[in-house]
Amino acid sequence: MSFNTPNGGAQGPLVTETEAANLLCQSKRTLQKWRVIGYGPDHYKIGRNVRYRLDDLNAWINSRRRSHTSENGGQ
Image (cartoon, rainbow, N blue to C red; front, side, top):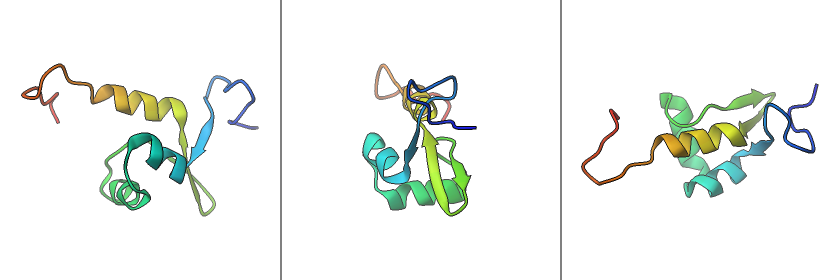
């Protein structure tokens, strides 16, 4: 079974840790720290590789949307 289908499929494409870090404007090391403390977008551990589902990254980004600076969104 492949999650990374040509059209994205129901699961959406998987991206590398580097690609996820670039999309989030963070370093790979920051994403690694987030995984240790249980923060950040959901990820997949496949052998020694970490992958992120593009749909999960976009959902995580959208969950941090704020309309003004004093809004904390319960974070």
